Image (cartoon, rainbow, N blue to C red; front, side, top):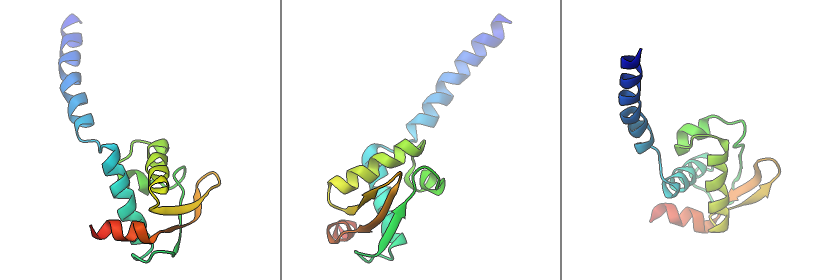
Length: 107
């Protein structure tokens, strides 16, 4: 039994490192979300969009986030930077990509 515990511990640490070493950093989450929003809006600032971070599981894959709260952070970050405008009513709704956000994609 003691041998199994050793191997489990010896294998878990490298596996844990490999999994978390590939996660996106917060700036990449924001970049990925901005790219996704621009695609949803066909690259047109002012076109209505919604970001349902609680129920749209595609956002986890698109942004590289681990859970819904990890998607909410880049939404708030992009809003604060002026790249998105909208309302937070349980999720980001009645929003749009700003001209600033559209030009950020081109840079």
